[in-house]
Image (tube, rainbow, N blue to C red; front, side, top):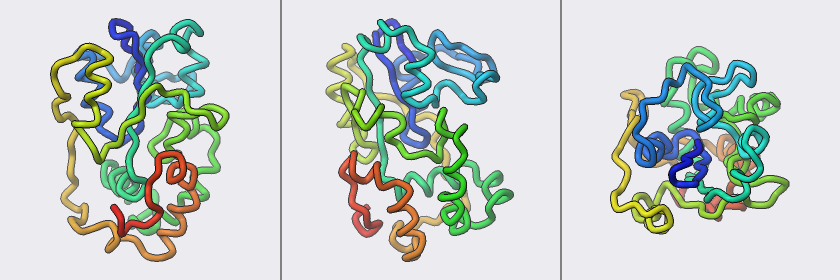
Length: 213
């Protein structure tokens, strides 16, 4: 999403407190059903993507070069193991219908991620598609979900803000297990996460073991 009054672009990775950050920077009540390319928000029928979740490549394509190059750019990333759990249970009914169990969802990821349209912006794709272009980071600041809200202090200072985001869209599905991720992932599932999100583990310095979450 683009915040022209802050001269900032936020690359919103799904399930990383993105809604809270968007409301923090702009409390306007935008309609997610309407296309608003000026601020990169809402459903874009032409592209088949919610613009607030657009990947770096799509944001660059749809944004004036002067804005993309000169605005402050940032994102929030999250450990791939906990993020996958959050993604599955956020759309639990849909994922149950498509995949069944969380285990089956993880096993489906290698096939699912062959769909090129997802790389316009999707909860499933590696997070580097929101932070990197041609293997080079385009963000001026990347912070970690696990270190919120303290990690936002440099962004607050850069944008002249004196408050922290309020919690929005914080949903914990009753079926979500309240156990450590190491107890949720089998060895096979761990290997799949390590493989499909290898670039995230390397780029953001996360341990490839759920034991370290």
